[in-house]
Image (cartoon, rainbow, N blue to C red; front, side, top):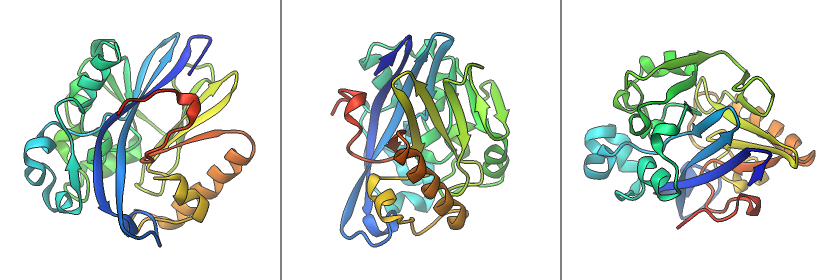
Length: 250
């Protein structure tokens, strides 16, 4: 999807299969959570929103993640890491200027070191929270990479023109952020884990865990309002992306 030099390209970076009820209240059976990253090209630079999983998860998930690994059956090949996906769509990983981390859980920040020339943009409160956590989805090796760091507080306009904006969507974690991309054809909001699936929004169904479920519920209500007024929502782990994003691989 492209508008005057602004484009979004999704990258599928593996699959996490788990008990659906743990992620969408009331849903039965297994759920395949797609791990997504998104390349956002802007005339001022190239942004990667989230980075998928660390390569160590492929070979020793429990060693990297601890007991959290036992919650999932992980499908993650050498072709699924974010570096390989970028190369596969013709994007040189060294041209990524900034990585915007929605939050620092293993399936969103694990591939950060694979784009080692990029500056990391994360909410200050997320960084400070993760710094004191190990386990529960956080692994320091994922994001404590020594790369340039830009800590932001609340809403943050990446290029100063209102076209690519970090929006605080606290609730899933203390410093979760989503990414708003404003095209001439309308707004697109990459929700990340503020809303796992379309089914989550339709049922206003929360996961079984989270830092502050009341805040996350309020975020869902805001997403519903945005969608009702024309914003296209791209959900964090949905297997189906909006058709306007075009082809997005296997």
